Length: 269
Figure 1: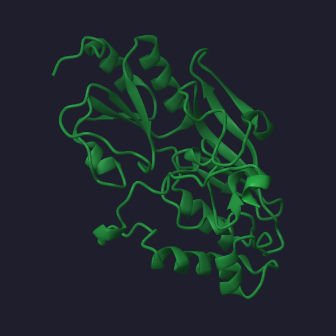
Figure 2: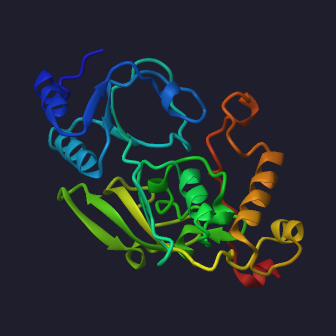
């Protein structure tokens, strides 16, 4: 397969960037939760947010087709040789402030690792989002939610690369038009999330439970210790095969990408 857009000069420039590694061995089967997919032109592994921004900006400037990948969920990719470059987000930094409840995670951080760290620190607000596959950077794009909670409840701002201009800035959550499984980043390629900042409660208790099945499991809709709620959520998800276990092929999936129908209250009644 030949592609004149990915020239030797561009590959050389990519390899010279700080915190960047070119990897020609990886396929999409290695990079996705479904373990499916063929071989891209190359995989550009980015260890920092600045590396992600530089790589995407360079490839965009030369019209090189690319796909940004982190956790690899919500992806079903064809086999064979694929005429695109993977920009792999490995910027997995995580800063948890137990005093203020401020959590800042790199876009490449494994989302459930972020939840586990917050719960371990006694911070509340994302415990119901335990066990969701994928990365922290993906959570604001579709306003990830489960068991009565969603990222919009706690999201403060995102660090965003604006692809048309190449600028990087922190963008407030209020500017993302967050709604049920939606943000204005979804269905577009205008920006790449580089990091997220969350504000969580510091009293060791969950948000009030709003999901019936979980509330029944816990014994009511009140606020509960965050570790207990996380354990309950993981038990429920495991029971449905919704927590990825690498050795159990039955748990391999693209994650939950469906949405419930949204209708007028009069129709619902």
